[in-house]
Image (cartoon, rainbow, N blue to C red):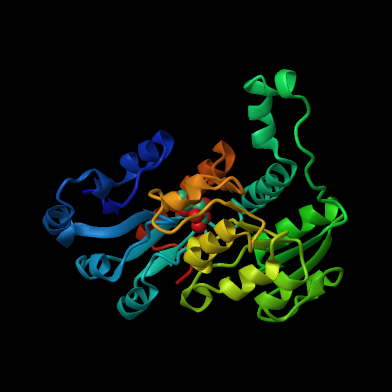
Length: 315
Ligand code: 8YV
C-alpha cells in the first residue's frame, strides 16, 4: 500500500524527520523554490499538513488541498492555522499542549531574572575587562517582594505564577474570569488595571483575533517607566509599534521578548535598544520538550490515518 502524503511546512529535527519519513511520504514545502507550483504538483494526494506553531496553514493553502484531512501543529499555539476554513471543511487540527508548558514558563522567568539583574550586560562587563579596569557593575533592581502580573492564567500562565510565588513576589492575574485554583492570587478585570498595579507584566495568553493588541499603548504606559513587560506568547498580543515607542521614549522601563512581528526578521528598532532582552522564539526549545512535541505531531497524524482518536485535538 502506498504511504499517505503529508505536506511539511517547516523544518523539524532529524529524529522527527526519520520517524515521519518511515511512515509517510513527506512533501517538504519549505524546501521548494516555487511553493505554488509545488503545492499544485502534489495537491491531489496530500491528506495531512505537518506545520509549526508560528507558520500554521492559511486559507489559500488549505483550500488548495482537496484531500486534506488533518493539520498537525508542532506547537501549542494554533493561531496561524485558519480554523474557519478547517471547520467548514471538517479538517481536524491538533497541537502539542502540556509537554512544553514548564519550559515556556521557565524561559519567561529566566528572562525576567536576567534582565532585572543585568546578567547579560554584567557578563559583557567581565569579558570586556571592564571589571578590572572600571570597577564594579552598576547596581540593579531586586525582584523578590515586587509585584508580578500574569495576563492569561492558562496552563503556561499558571506555571509562571507558581514560579514567581517561589521568588516571593506578589501575584495578580487577569483572565476572562477569576479561576478557582488561583485563590492565593489577586484577580484583576482588565489588562490595563493589571499593568497599573504591577512591576512585571507577563503575557501568557493564547493568541486569537480577540486578543490582538490586547497589550496596547495604554496598557504599556500603565506598566510605566519602572515596569518590565515579558512576552512568551505571540507578538500579536502586543501593539509592537506602541511598545517600541514606549521603550525608546522612556514610558516603559524594559521588555523581555521571545516573539516578534515578522519574526525572524524583527524590527531593527529593537536592536538599538539597551532596555530589552531579545530571544529567538525558543521558549519550548529544549531537547526533551521538542522530542515530545515531535512525537505528538507524529502520533496525531498516525491516529488520523488509522481511524483512531486523536491524542491532542483542537478541532
Ligand atoms: C514553538 C510555539 O517554538 O508552542 C508554540 O506555540 O510557538 C513554540 O513552542 C513553535 O511552535 C515551533 O515552531
